[in-house]
Image: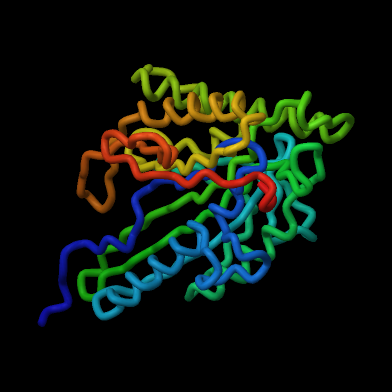
Length: 308
């Protein structure tokens, strides 16, 4: 048959998968996996590994009709500064830039070309080992930064030479922290303040998007600047909300649910390769509540199980 077919679904829409929620509720495991340092598909794989596995499976099915390349980069936002988790020894500054087409990117960030799931697993494991963590009264391994994995796909159709590109952000948002409970001070206190400040800025962006305001305050923080093209407009966004079942975390749980409600109020019009589909930003809902509007159910986690 001729080497032509409808545009492949393997090229992702511009969008983001975010893991958010209360402190010590296994958000990092939602991104990576719950099986410790092995990071395999056999040990409760997280959304990053599942996304990579599904992507390469779909690209392999399309290989007769297309040629493709995939790159993977991994950074953390620590106290208003982006750090390249795949190139820690380099003396460089990662600067936020915007292309003429409106794509946000980090200048000087290392992009590793990956050809299969195993290469993504290896890079993800190295990056997670390098991120900032600290013991607090709430968690022995508390995340002190946001981690953002960026997968870019370029696909060229054989014969026509038509090219399509896509980008997917996989984001582990550090949990909001009440200093009274975490009992941090000094440098740890500064980290907590910066995390809470960035989450507040993200909440302001989501509120503006949900209300359809003409001005969206993306530039108020480094986090929202980088995520700008993956939150509004033509992007498709999914948030996993992780909640602690402990009664002592009730206040943090309510704040997290209020945050998720802002996400559910955002409606975008995802577009890729000239096609348009109607979709809205979504967030999962707790398993004990009744999901509405087609939302999937999330899984509350016990906070003593592992790091955030």
